[in-house]
Amino acid sequence: MHEVTPINPWFALAYLISGVCFIIALRGLSSPSTSRKGNRYGMAGMLIAVVTTLLMHHTAGIVEIVIAIAIGGAIGLVTARKIAMTDMPQLVAAFHSLVGMAAVLVAAAAFLNPTAFGIADGAGQIFAVSRIEMGLGIAIGAITFSGSVIAFLKLNGNMSGAPIMLPGRHVINLGTLAAILGLIAYFLTDQSPWVFWTITGLAFLIGFLLIIPIGGADMPVVVSMLNSYSGWAAAAMGFTLGNSAMIITGALVGSSGAILSYIMCKAMNRSFISVIAGGFGAAPEAGGGAAKSDRPWKRGSAEDAAFLMAQAEQVIIVPGYGMAVAQAQHALREMGDILKAQGVKVKYAIHPVAGRMPGHMNVLLAEANVPYDEVFELEDINGEFAQTDVAFVIGANDVTNPAAKTDKTSPIYGMPILDVEKAKTVLFVKRSMGGVGYAGVDNDVFYMDQTMMLLADAKKMVEDIVKSLNH
Image (tube, rainbow, N blue to C red):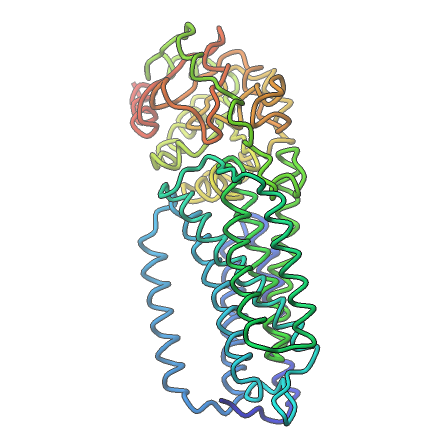
């Protein structure tokens, strides 16, 4: 398949530079203000790594490789230009599935022709360490693929976001995982095809079984978790291929994804194991708030909201997925600018798991050019709601629901929330009173004395508020 040239220190240096670029990219992506620069560093690092890899090997099919790169790049460019921000979580899940499948295909190719990869002796027996790398790589890759496909279907609405609980799921999952690990160990002594393909099949199965019992409220954790899996799969294949760039990149993605998963779990007051076990939203009887919709509530208009906010000293805006669906972020920024021009202090409160993936709301606000110094995370702003005149909640439900603090039967119990109910006035933008959040529970804030419900499409409501403020 290919012949590796003698080790060249310049190639090692190029891989080192690409690795540094990836590290700088991750650092840049930690803040909206530096995310563009971070993306550029990541692109530069990947370009260096790809070119270096092609130069290192005397590849017979260089034309085919260039054509494949061109096709893949064109698909990526078109997808990036056409995808809506509301569909970004689905896109991320889809990309994770491609990384997982790439790891599976590389491992399969290495197993079918190990001498071409330099991982076998003269008799065609794969080296023991390579078998471990191959077994782990294909297992993690297959889990990433099937798990990402289920995550995509749930996020895209093709599959219910509610947890799907199989009887005896914990026993099935543990048994399947044990079988995979046992077969990888057995693979060290027997490289028969049935062992390899059984590991592959069981890994595809466990990826499916792990994600279907996870409820929609946990999707941000699932996305970051699958991101971590894809990184470790790439790292494992890097060892198989003897490619240091893949090892570095995979380790960076895997570790950063694992850290992000931990942060997301901490933000929801959940352990990583409880999420994987489908514990969040697991109780079908929990949060059955549908009957609460007949409680008295107050409806307001855009004019009412404009008057209340214009008279306020401080307004805290809480964006959620409803804002993303309506693409209301630009109108929201315009509303904030008008309020600030009238002497009102405006801040934005972001919950770590608002939206469908980590950082979803931050990206949307950055897209609308909301100043970064006006955007605050939960722990930095939660103490201000009690001294705030108006909390303007636009399309957020679960992350503002007091049931997380009071109702032990609720699927979101224990999750830290934004304390909007402590504000003097709560303006809650929502399409209708009939809908509930992604976790499927009603919100007591709707029925509080200081709450005014603004029932309409989020973008249309904010645009009407802007008109009223201008008048």
